[in-house]
Length: 92
Image (cartoon, rainbow, N blue to C red; front, side):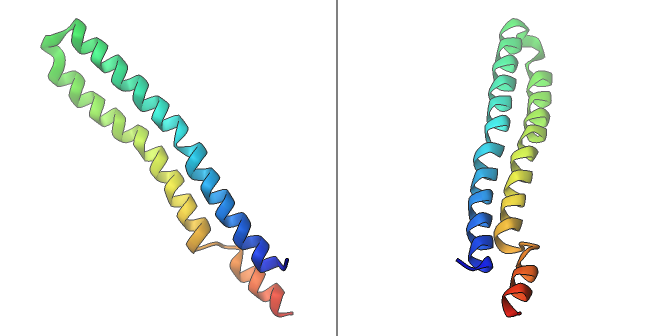
């Protein structure tokens, strides 16, 4: 197996692991946030609008972590910085 194939396979595997492992934390964080928000709304129904607004801002912040993992995996697949090295090394 030449170096180009090794970089291609490792890029695909690492990008898959990035998405898989990088989505576990945000999923657990979002579940915990929604659970706590529902509990708070059940205890104080008058503050439901404020709690909901704060919940959505927090969920957007939590979801940004998963989006960062997605961006990293796309960079590994489509704009891998090691491709130039591999192509130059394979040409020698």
